[in-house]
Image: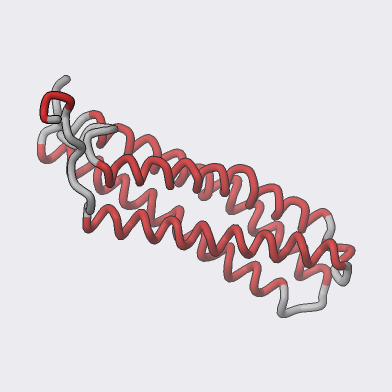
Length: 165
């Protein structure tokens, strides 16, 4: 398979970094909004925070996740890195799958449930759901930050080929 030229690689890498940064930014915004929910007793404001999170997830959140995955996949297969040649790339792929599941399924579900249950603001069920959401958001931030760090340091090196064993 033909590899990307250096200029093409730089453009794809730029797109990958931008999509990844947007994903992290959306997640940090989620954290800020979820903390803000705990700072008010006004149900209208709480609904507005949750609605903002839902709109972010449905727009910039989804686009950034899909863009990050597509550009990362293309960078892997169209450069020397490959999908399974390096341990650090395999680690990134696993963590990315976890982040996708966390974002697309759990964080979305908890946000939707929080929005629908915001009328029951003072109930235990509302707070349990909200703290699950906040836990998911914090985990997402930790995982995404780890992905950035792994991308910079590229630890663990290349896997051994079968004929080198």
